[in-house]
Image 1 (cartoon, one colour):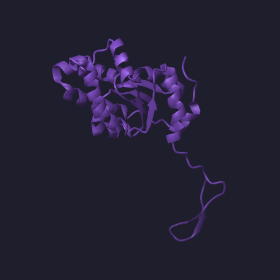
Image 2: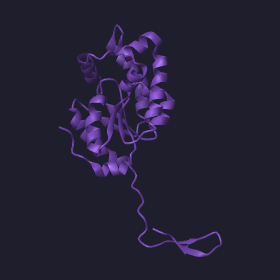
Image 3: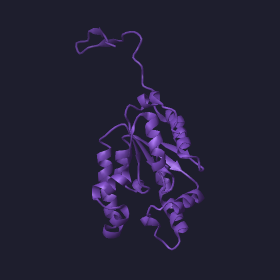
Image 4: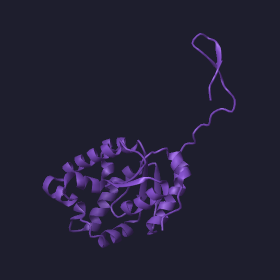
Length: 208
């Protein structure tokens, strides 16, 4: 079940993209589709787009070219996505580590999906998706290390959504409820014409 349609909120967004950031296991991809449907937006998974562009899996890119090459490709894909509008974008967990990526995401609204470490570990263990950065003798310790590095970066998001295992549709509803708090109201046109001075000093009426 998807959250109720919220087209009035979509109008206030005026086509601004929503970028979902957060650690692996926070459910960015699962949340993206119901959120996009509620707004009348399209959903894009940035990691999937990277794999399509490279014609290889992310695990293969890490294994053959290293993390730096993957990050360069990720930034190029994000640059392309930023030229489009009316999208909900699920980003990779490390997208926040490059300042250039923030430049792209700041053209829209950045939403940080936060979750307790125990929940992240539980979800990651149940997900068969390869996680190159967790190929470590102690995945829990590695996850804690990554969280320590990235949490100050995630905190730069426009909006933080704390979740504790709610289904994606409920988390989408939480995002929809919180979004208006960070959107500026558009100034309405004045009820009566405003008197303006033109270049010659003459008084004219504005057109509204």
